[in-house]
Image: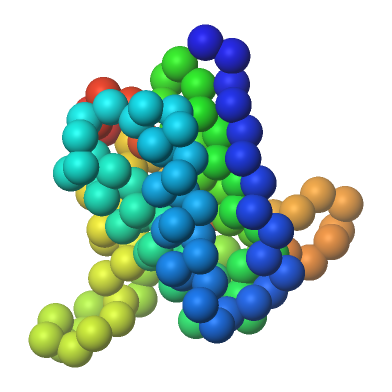
Length: 137
């Protein structure tokens, strides 16, 4: 299978961007016939929601969402203008909202990471990979 790529330019927006990215991803997964049924699709949408929300809260808003679908599964890439790499927040009150996004990403994604932009440009790309069969390994 040849890799298929979809790009959504966001330009640093924060208002309505999570829903826009979820809708964009949902349509791509439907076009690609993402396996595993509705629960598998919801897992991918939750992962997209988490990384987009983090970009809105901590990085001034995402610049671009890229989805790459190939034989091994799906790679989600989200770029923003902040040079700060994602990191877990110290444990706090579990009853309060926030601070759990990267835990969700670690549990649902096969792998994830962040890479600073090349050439000294400020910003980074946060990426995650999801196996098309729903496994983490």
